[in-house]
Length: 99
Image 1 (cartoon, rainbow, N blue to C red):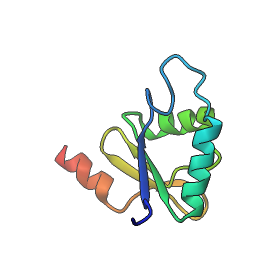
Image 2 (tube, rainbow, N blue to C red; image 1 turned 90 degrees about the vertical axis):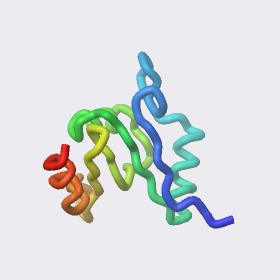
Image 3 (tube, rainbow, N blue to C red; image 1 turned 180 degrees about the horizontal axis):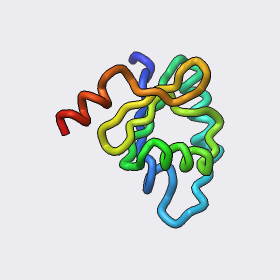
Image 4 (cartoon, helix red, strand yellow; image 1 turned 45 degrees about the vertical axis):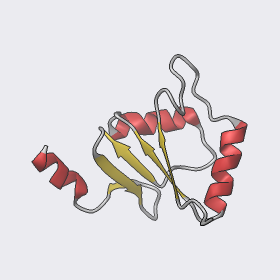
């Protein structure tokens, strides 16, 4: 079987349980590190805005940042070489126009 190339997770209610302090569990942290070490990518899908998702990631305190954030149920951001979140191509602008 081919290795999993993309791990895509929900955020609120999945990674961060409602009403919890929202820290990353040791088991999930180890799984993320192994997945990344094997060349896998991680994306988080959320209804949060980009800024709200970034705030949640700080609270979650995973051992690594996701490669992609899919925010507001439709926008896609990726990390650039400096670690900043940038729009993924023209997807977001086209999505806003069509929405």
